[in-house]
Length: 487
Image (cartoon, rainbow, N blue to C red):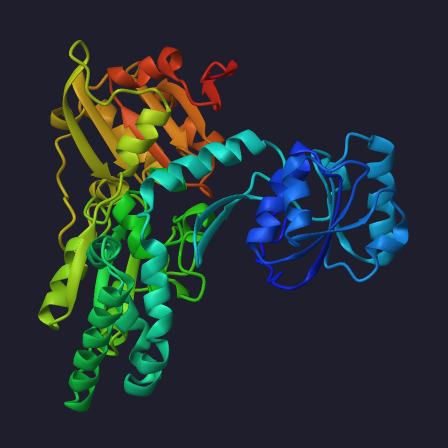
């Protein structure tokens, strides 16, 4: 984070603007809209400033600049075509400890002005840290198209009933009230109504919630099983993003990326319940109990998993437990690792010329086969020839540790030693690695990949296609040791 985001109350506060041309005019309009006491220093005033001076909106301090004019200012803007003067203003403001912005000169900005979406009192500020103001404006246009024009009325109405909510709804239930009152459907509906209509409907909701509280009716908690995808935050579904913003508590796996966790509501509790290989293990029974306990207290719980909850994520087990304990739940699907990682490695899992069948397998299955034992429910006798080989693709999750065993089982099943494989490490992330080789190379590929980072094995003729079809900027390596960058 290069800049700390903040909204300032400038109402009746002195702000000094050096310059009164077209660029300065754009700054002045926003400052006047914010209620600032605008003081201008300029040799000439353009027509807009002349009007503002005439009606008393701005004060012309002087036509020539001096450092004394900055005394007592909350903010200072320098917006002249005189670069030497702009530098003087910056240095003077710095010496006085006044925040200063030299327009179009990032090195001389103690703060920067963001692009703004204004649905007052709702405001959204967008910044690229000065790197690309045009990009910030483009992002603003996208957000403008999404947000209802009447969103400000909803915010004003909510502010108007806040005291009523405080008087009638206990503190522990207020956030739940607002979450339900300001649902997506309510926002869309209310934004087209009048301010008075919105206030009336909100008061009715407060009265209803207060009555339920008086009867001892407790708002039930809820659990969301959310698939966090293969790692990249921009591969989350829109629903997943919405749910992360509603969570009171997030129980997340170790494989959920920091990039995704950053999208969780800031004041939500985060609990790492990861079961990553080689590290501390949190038992599934304990996770189930925590979900029920938290939801029983009326909290909104998000069970956040890498990939998809229903693909080797024990989502079915968790739903069975929640249903048995009467807990309401919702499942939000995610992009499972096989799909996401293969796509970012340029490996089509099915292909008319190479693969007409796809099997997803967990590495624990391979381990159970090799050892002839395992937890009840593991497949003990796998016909690998039916899963892998010509015309088929097998994707093995969490199989890097079992690479040597897999090699032996595949060879025993009659799958050729030169049959293509690919190992993807940190798929979809900036440090993604794709290692290409053959069944015979599996132990060597696993050694090079290591066991610290998550890996995915793809076995099939399609695996070889990634050498030419890879598109994501990442390291691609063949068993021969030749490196290249996928473009």
